Every structure is written in structure tokens, then in C-alpha cells.
Image 1 (cartoon, rainbow, N blue to C red):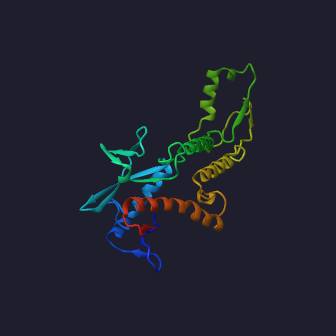
Image 2: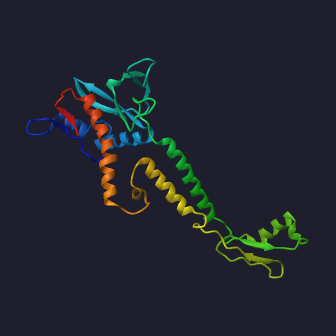
Image 3: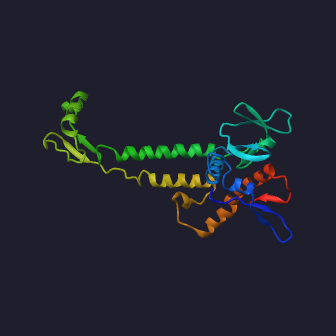
Length: 265
């Protein structure tokens, strides 16, 4: 979203950047309620979440007055139809009258876009479970856990008596205070607790982050896994970021420009 959008024109001595009302509209003020940075950010984030994003152009006096994001637009293609349309706020808009940005084509409906949401949902559930496990472990009242050995005929073998004993000797207002119990009443042993490493929390989080990076096709170090690699970063820019940029460029050029000598870059 920080990349400028240039209006270019093919000329004999090389392509030249055009600076006019249209170029300013697209690059600076495409949307009345936001800047180009906000506008492109919404398009790309929506594409990454849902696979596609719809923008509805508004015109005034044959000039583009607004390129409005349409988050609630739904796309439909009638049976045996060669085109499709969008329904937005009660209006039916033909495919040629909307900007339809797609992350990648749906294999079954190539005119639609598809995103990584299904795979991400599964990974997110795993990350949430890992976080809950870590929180529960770190907030445990008895750290390290203890085992209290009593005789089978002891009063503590009954649940009510154990509850009284726990409330009297093991409950503390300050959990950092030591446990103080009568030495001749029972035998207390300390168990070595499982660490976060034993629970594979760290490995699990790293694996989930690597999975997310793979699904979104971004370098792992951008999500805190691994170290920065210049070649990997440059490859990501030229392959992944360039592909998204090209899809935006081509949709703007196809739907907005009449001149065959001009294009957006």
C-alpha cells in the first residue's frame, strides 16, 4: 500500500509517466473516505482473507469521482451465462462495471478468487490451543506440583477431610509464599514439573508460524521464525509481491483506461 500507482503511456522513446487528473485520482485520492494507502491496504488484506475484493467506481460528468470499497458485495453467475455480476446495496452491477481484484483463481470457478482462509483457520485453532496450554501451565497454583502421601486409613482418604486440609494448609493468599504443614502429619514429595520445552510449546509455535508463512507465501523471518535472508526477501518481493501488484495493475488498466497506449504501473 506504500507503493505509488503510476499512469504510464507508451511512446517511441520509451514509456513515460503521465501526470494528470486521472493519475492523481488513482494514486492520491481514489476513495473519498481514505487515501491510496488505506484503499490499497483494504484491497490486499481482503484478497488475502477472502481471495477477492470488489470496488465499485462512481462517475460524475464522465470522470471517475470515487472508487468505493464494497465489502458486502456478493458475486453471482447465472447458469449458462458468459459473464457474472455483483449485488451491492440492492444494485446489480455487471462485471465490466466493477473492479474485481483476485488473489488467485478458483479452480472450479476461475472468474472468482480464492484465498487461504480454510488452511489458516486450522492453524489458528492450533495456535490458540497452544496459547491456552501455556497460560494454564504458567498460572498453575502449585509450582512445582506436589504429591502428598497418606495412609489408607487416614482421615484424609475421605474427600471432605481432604478439602478441609487443602483449605487450611495449601491455600495461600500469596501464591509465592512457601507451604507450611505439620511434619508428623504426612509425607510430602516434590515432583519435577514439565517445562515448556518438555511440552514442546516452543517447537509447536514455531511449526505453526512456519505453516502460516508457507500458506501466505512469506519468508518465515517476517513472522519471527529464523533469521533474515536477503536473497529470500528479494525473491519474495519479485515473486509474491510482484504478482499481487500485477493483478491490481491489470484490473485498473482493463477497467478504467480506454487508451491502448496507457497502463497503470
